[in-house]
Length: 67
Image (tube, rainbow, N blue to C red; front, side, top):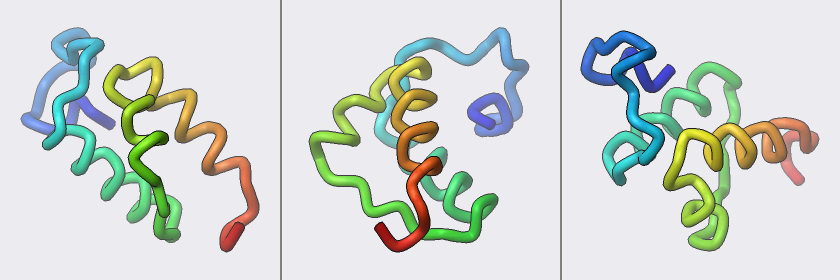
């Protein structure tokens, strides 16, 4: 998903995610899954790397919508 931000190849995506990439990623996930993600600052801090974002999104999307 992050590769499509800026039309990059997956190999060009760095591990570190900047704030614009993070905002774009969260928006894309919300659009793809049809639900709003209510992420507090503690959760967003964990999403400053690709690895962290994958972990957080897996946890958040595993929860039933509305919880």
